[in-house]
Image (cartoon, rainbow, N blue to C red; front, side, top):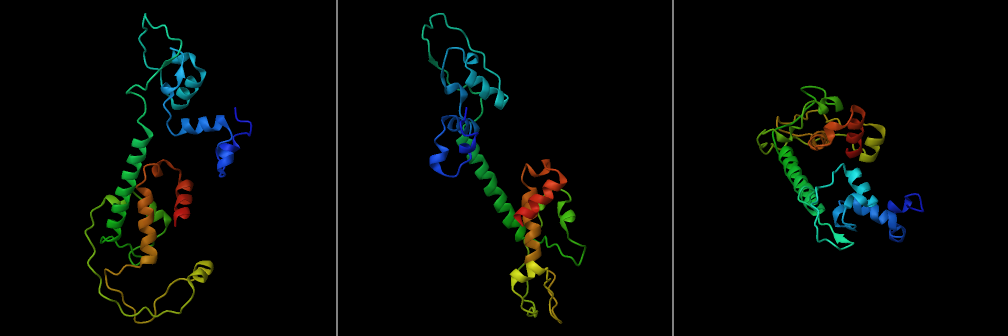
Length: 216
């Protein structure tokens, strides 16, 4: 039992994090410690600590055959093949998934998918419709022609964001069909990346909108 009400478990200072034995143990459990590697009595179900870990993970005890010649009071119970994969494998899988998503995101940024307000209004509701577009093959966007200079009043980006001042092109500015307004389309591409995460579709409507505002 933690004497500091669990505060040392989330403390930033290293000295505070390691001062409590109970919280150190809890962190080990949280990151996938093998409950059957604990030195215990021959029957793991008799160990209250192992039982608590198994309940927390929703696991069941494996069947253990009794041995007639087993006279040792303490034994080492090794992890069976049915228990969770090692933490290292889970971490490697997550890293591989993130690398895959990053490549798909960059491919979408280079693609012909070029959302524009000329066709329809683009807002959060529009961006949230349907599954992620990162799995769609749009083809690579050709290199755009250099458009005329973007003549507009110079305003610091911090002031534009603070006061909501839009970017309006000057007179005579006519972008080519494959010209991308990166300030806008990059936000759309980022939302498509977020929609590709497995947990995103389990969120409620407000949680999805909140997540979008946090990353954009």
